[in-house]
Amino acid sequence: MTVWDRPEPPTRPAPLDRERIVAAAIALADEGGLEAVSLRKVAARLDAGPMRLYGYISTKEELFDLMVDEVHAEILPEEQPGDWREVLRIRADRTRQAALRHEWLADLLGGRPSLGPNALAVTEATLAALDGLADLDTVMRAVETVSAYFTGAIRREIANLRAERATGLSKRDWQRAYGPHVSRMLATGRFPALAKAVHDGTEVDAEESFSTGLDWVLDAVAAKLARPPA
Amino acid sequence: MTVWDRPEPPTRPAPLDRERIVAAAIALADEGGLEAVSLRKVAARLDAGPMRLYGYISTKEELFDLMVDEVHAEILPEEQPGDWREVLRIRADRTRQAALRHEWLADLLGGRPSLGPNALAVTEATLAALDGLADLDTVMRAVETVSAYFTGAIRREIANLRAERATGLSKRDWQRAYGPHVSRMLATGRFPALAKAVHDGTEVDAEESFSTGLDWVLDAVAAKLARPPA
DNA sequence: ATTTTGCCGAGACGCTGTATCGCAACAGTA
DNA sequence: TACTGTTGCGATACAGCGTCTCGGCAAAAT
Image (cartoon, rainbow over all chains, first blue to last red; front, side):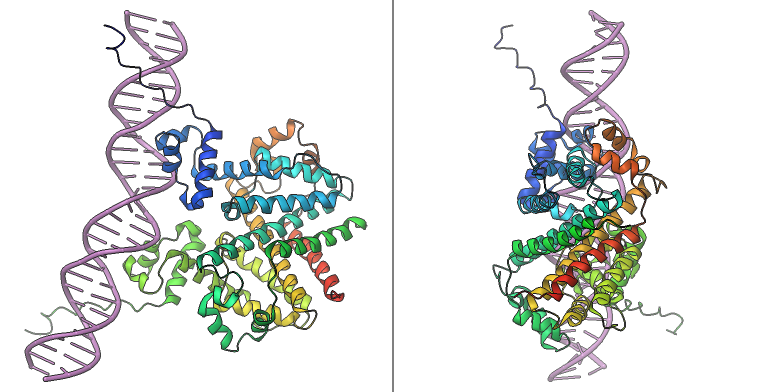
């Protein structure tokens, strides 16, 4: 029996590891949002059956956790530039940038404790930058307050962005963007302050709004760090 | 043919309206979390077929929107007590309380723009309290910054609460609560600042932590309101 | 060469959100 | 009173989901 008669051995399944699984999941999520991520589709991208994934993760939520941690690798800057304020600011900005690249991140941010290695590294870098500037409690409060701010701000920004996209291109005009419903509501006269805000408000771009709010919060932190509590 | 022979006419289906649908959905979510809310189960609670709901909502997401708006009715306080700072503080506190009563709210908070009547009323009340204290841009930034903070903070609090519950009763101890994984990570020595924080950190209760961070943010807002930009 | 082991994937289960469509009960008209 | 038009409910269907079970096959161990 010559070689030509013998069939090639069946190609062994492509080797798999978490990294490739997570990469496939992220690609899927980047393209179609979190809801486009199904274990079946992730597996299909890797030429594998869905059940194969269960050797590497035990639940879909775990896959999400891995995805979030993977993105934290993008958030952690290469090198730290000293000043605590800049460290916090950069962390916030980079998280925002990551969420703009991976909008699904906004859906997951703050939804579960992030305890993966990359997320821990980010926290470590943040804490290190604040170490010694005040007692530990104050430092923790500072980090958590800033995190809470940018988590919430990023979520809102992405939510608005999606709403704008969904209602069609209308970026500027609140009323037209959010449709006749809000207009009607405002017309009832029950919301005078809101109506005024919508009518008179200048359109600020999202980045500036994020940045300004962040500055405020950082100012507050600065004040507390300067005067450590008795 | 007497009355006795004739069967009763089939009982007309129980009348339905959005209020009852939303109430059923909220009850379900309170009991088993957001994932326990399925159109089939909501309909079953109302002795109706799933398809019946589509007369009142056109998508499951809309049902979530209605649920969020319904909870905003709990958030809007009966009467406003003047001072802008207290108005913002009360709004944050009440939102937090609502999220503690309805943990699923944390999953939805900030996820989509809230444009229902109750949410608009809450925004209206907030804006009204700040009206005239500074130029409109500053006021908007203030409201959004505070909202971003408490959205993020509430999310984190609920996330931690769930994690504690999931890993078993261990409320206090970080390391034990988050399991051997984190301990091992810390033991690697790659996260000295984090390790110190975990080791030396005093356990602060969630409410106080929320409240302190909120105060900081409100301080920042106060500073900006006092000095309206040129 | 033979046994053991471990892992992969086909299939199944119960569930999901939603489209389709036939039927039955009402309102209006002759 | 008989008929007809309209409305809206719900049975059924469909495609997809996460996950469990299990049979079989290839690699490793003996």
